[in-house]
Length: 156
Image (cartoon, rainbow, N blue to C red; front, side, top):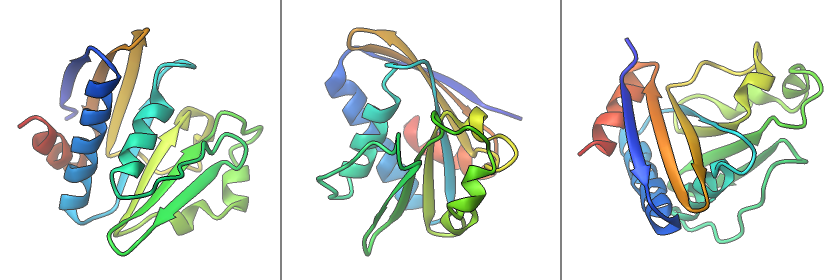
């Protein structure tokens, strides 16, 4: 059963703080995670992903819009940020070796996951972002035990 949590974020600082908290919780689980970032263009998906990644000390965080995936790996974490917006066919993900980016110790942040349907593994958590200006409404749903553990950490 999916658990849903709605969070209101009033400004960019709160969005960044949420992303850092999510990053702390994700690394504390010590397992593979797949997080879909859902929302319209300009909803803040990349901003949230960028702060999540920067939390682990990666200063230069590029948008994967044209490369489809950017990976960030250090002693602490392996993060793979996907942006499927420009996919013309989900099979393109097979060509970039999407299966190599999953498993224990890997965290996948996936934007526009619906465009990779059939090639992308099911999400542990889906974060839907909506808003205007700097205000964001996050609707978070869980889809696995790992997702529920992640949400329980966030919701404390």
